[in-house]
Length: 98
View 1 (cartoon, rainbow, N blue to C red):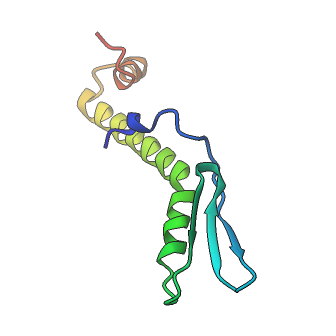
View 2 (view 1 turned 30 degrees about the vertical axis):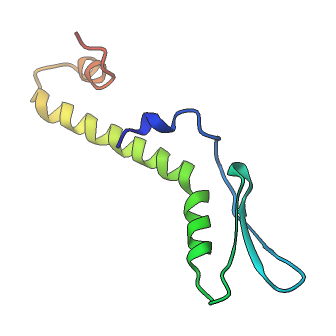
């Protein structure tokens, strides 16, 4: 996954707001990204789940990036087999190694 495509997104945290109109119709809104939907009349929770997922997007993206860094670091450590210093490993991880 190319996470760079998400650079510049609206910063989190994003919140999920639940509303109800005068007729009892439920609405779900994620104001940070102007997402609004109403719950369908069949009792489905899909709209709510979608809104929760959208609201969690900044946290999910941050976790993907964090885990990618962990995996990249582990790969560097395994490839080095003690032949390089920690500073050299960090340079390689950051793409600074020549």
